[in-house]
Length: 267
Image (tube, rainbow, N blue to C red):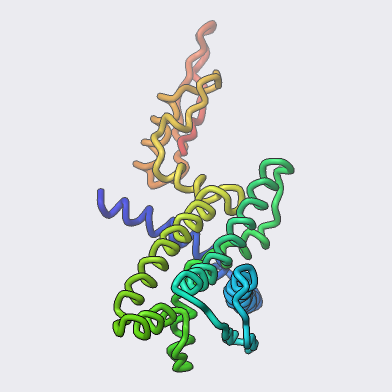
């Protein structure tokens, strides 16, 4: 039983990875997937810092520096308390969350109203959801690689170290806030992949490999019964899904002629 469940889970994971473009693709498609991933992660970085910049402008915090590089954007500003710092570390990943939620909504409405949404854009949204989920971790890695002393992870640490001579509580608040945002992003990505992506393809796969047999029976279909379908399925399992042809003799009900030979096909 456990082996069967693991096989089902592995199959679903492989289908998700395939939808992202890592499997069942040639070299050209794989190169296109890598380029798409690079564009999405660059877009994620831009929206992260743009969200922080817009938040600072809304609360009238003076921004003294806003530089752009391909791997990081430098944002320097003057703040007057703890709340602006909390808002900044929340609006970075939060801006990506809002954009991802907007893209999911557009995809869902398109599938409901016009029953169509390009699979390429579904793939783009899936990649963007993955980048949104990893946003804070990527920012922390880049800040540590650049030895940034005022990165997102250390903003509240520096504030409490200056105000209370102990930055531990700042780190605790930072990880608590980011953990809550991470849970939200994981849920949104899960919901999109399972129920919206490519018109709910993953949901359909899960239903097919985990559903009960009667779930596929059409009750108003008078051609075959559920017992016949079940018998056919069991015979196909016994025959390793091969087509078996059995010869049977059918006597004539009205004459004394020799019985005729007929063929019975089992799948």
